[in-house]
Image 1 (cartoon, each protein chain N blue to C red):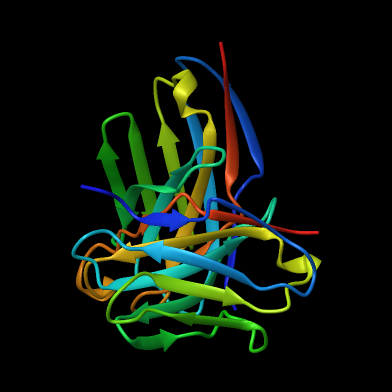
Image 2: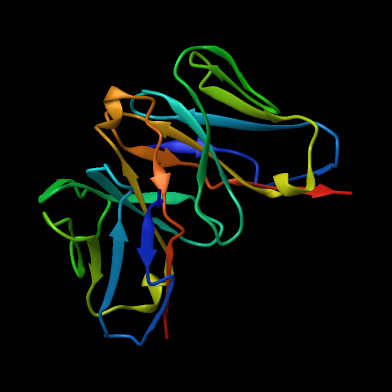
Length: 117
Length: 109
């Protein structure tokens, strides 16, 4: 019974390159959330997706960042033309149904740590 | 905006009790959560409060006062493995969790 799987766990990119982070939710979960965590800061909400739909991307920068959750395959967080300020841990979480309908427990992956040189 | 405050660090002795306070000012309220996060690992769910009062789960308890915008997480009979960061989070709508910066608890022998 695998949990939320994220890869890569660590990613190093040079400024201007692209970063792609993948997240496979827990089996049976159809809701995916991406959060960013900077050192000494809390988890910051970026985007909430259901299969083939972006529900809320209010926390995601308008430029260079995009997210998808296709019908088949993992959710992808894509960062184009990375800059040093993008260096952070990116966490994916999943839930089985809309959180309003249950206690709201999110199941987190172990994160992808992006370092931009 | 959301404002969730918790102490940055706390230190306690093995076997002791530690209380981590969290105050919040959010545009809405639909539940308060506590998560535990060991360094380099995934946050894991500890507790959920939506009504005022105390929720007890083994060595961990969480308290909520909605009128005061206040919660605490109580860790009893501390063990070395409890050394971790503890994250307070508020759900202000249907799904979005806003997190505090976390409290790093260090348990000493």
